[in-house]
Length: 307
Image (tube, rainbow, N blue to C red; front, side):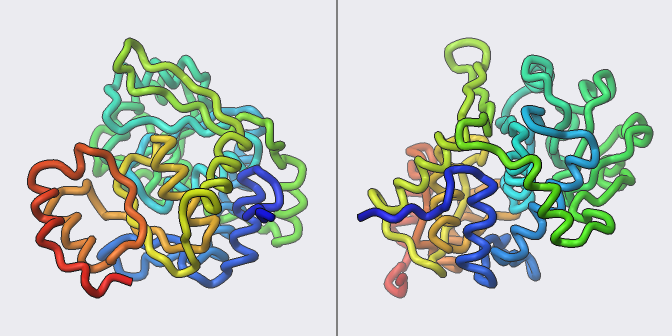
């Protein structure tokens, strides 16, 4: 008889259960970046601290926070923190234009956005006029509202002062746990509002519940793939896609694998080196990534020592 990987189909349960099962195993790592390993225990601690910080800054159940950033461990930490308190994550493609980002932020009535130095410019105008909170993805700092008004470059954005959301003040772990219980989501709560790419018109928001996403991943762990603790996954597709988010993040995490991120865009030269060094057991992709030069490179790549 099938045994579920989680005690309930919510992101709060995902975070709690994978930390309890896999503890000191490495959950996330950034390829080529020394000291970037994050264990499952550290992942839970970071999510809990950011969740408490979100609550302290007025974010609660049903509130929406956008994520406009390149793939990284902090992208996932932010998502888990948002969903774990019953708020709704609004992942956005980094390819969206400034106008599209503004329209989606307004349409979804977001109360904040998590973004990075490469993408902040698409949202900064809306942030200033609307007064929503701005969180820097690189370090998960809640940027000072007054200082935000003077940001005019990537350097300004990176240097902008703020509050570290990864710190939950003087709350002890039990106090934090008590706070989080008050905001625990249910399986039928909306976890994500995902906007389509807009290929058939304006981007449309699709509501996905905790049950939709977590149950799908849980079923995949048994029905479609065999993944084991310590296996390696390489994430290259945008995390704002439900496919990448489910199959390259949730499924490996539910099974105790280690997920590697690239430190920049998946250029062919970088990706081929990463494939040789990481030797991933899991790599989800789409046809455009395996055509042309990449296809010929893969054929010449020696995977003879692959597990």
